[in-house]
Image 1: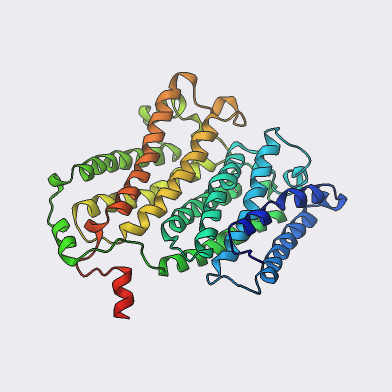
Image 2: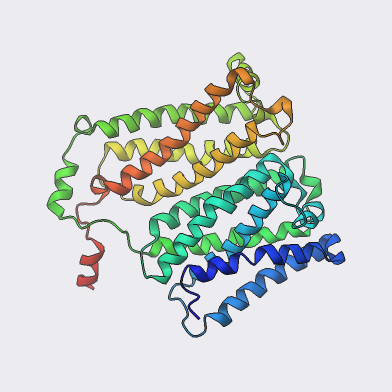
Length: 375
């Protein structure tokens, strides 16, 4: 039926509009257990429908099914954001009342917006790549980092924050967002790198360059050192650092860190315990050649930080956040500039590794084409 082409999953994802509208009109949708059951049924029905439609020409990559189903849920998330901000009505009101009410927070709505736009475009891109037999490893790793960071902060924040007493059966619908990315990540990691063909001599020549011969890497190291300080400092802030500088910063520049929803606190702790070591290792990798792990992990962290910072910066300014926790008007530019630089640095680091990977390759590196010949 031609469904493996990008148009098929795209059209299937748009069925989220009539499905959510019909379910919203059902009286049974007022019960929390029924809502969880309906959500599980819709996802299973969508998966079965995909299998039936693709029997004639099944995709070679099983992740096609994962991305197709997730593209449907991305449209659902976009509907949630549009409805909660007053652009549409009558679609997801039932789910917000008795399903996951914490999605009405600034953080919840912004991760819905991110999922309904950025993730949705990534799904369509990866579906198109699978249908055409193209390599999507780089995009897949960026998506993996983005989704994992989103779910980690969202789920932990729900449990330990002020909405911990309002967790309902629909919370379990987030399980696929935890389990499937793990499986997807393992498959993506096993795929071939889309690294341009390079001779061992060229790799060795790049390895011989000192740091003074690589001004871009010097700039990245300076950025990484600043990011290390910024990450550690904000981690200390949410741990109630008693110093005057911490007190001044948190109340004059980022009061959102004290919001009882707990999402910002979880994010800063995740960054301190998981992002901080990566930043330190990245400094080492820019000074010592052959750290091939940088080619994958910079993309994962670029996606993770892009998503996390979008939600954090947006929530700090969003009208859904109580006024006392929003960024003060006088500190607006400093907050935006510092957080934007922090976010963009990860993207530049990933771009540098993706476009000029020779320094990070081992001297015994073989391109994908050479690997095929050897096998």
